[in-house]
Length: 101
Image (cartoon, rainbow, N blue to C red; front, top):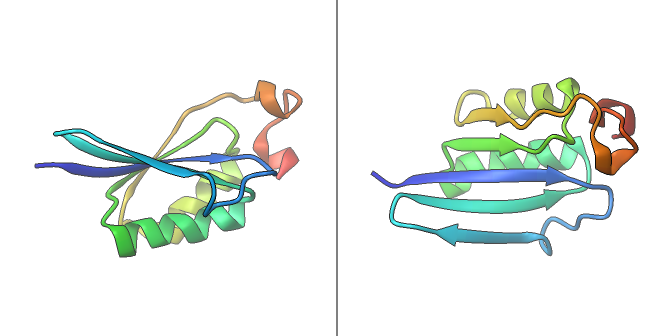
């Protein structure tokens, strides 16, 4: 069975409809999407789960604990949420996303 999955990355300059691409393999269809805030990530995750059949969402290391919680709450169990973890991310001044976003 083919899996529909997504990887969300958060950067202040991202425009959701501009920074999206997908890789489709025989085993997985992976959507990569940039978002500019935790709020936008939560909305995008719910749309991915509800409207596009995504069952697994991986969040980039820019998401702090609060951002992960917001996305997890937004999808309400409709998709599994995983996290790549840096406690202090190098691309946002070695801060947690919670301090930045």
